[in-house]
Length: 75
Image (cartoon, rainbow, N blue to C red; front, side, top):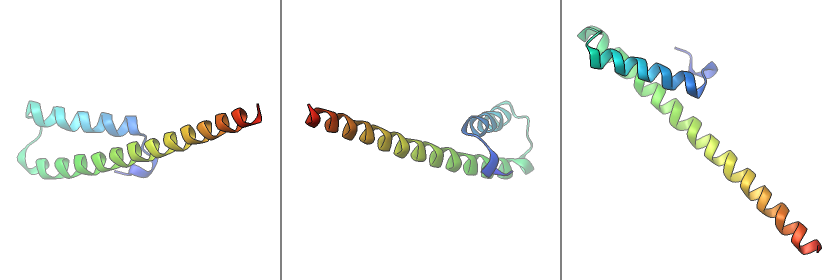
């Protein structure tokens, strides 16, 4: 599995599929450890994406705030 080209939505869908397989008993015990490892990697990927997005949003909001303050001082 290559997480570098995967989107957040794709990763969440893959996690949901793994969880469904585990919950419904669709996988045998030999696959379980590998699927849990995959889910763990996908969760780390998603967490990283969320953290990155949060930082980008904070940066944008700060730029907007600074822009608004600059306009107020010009008035």
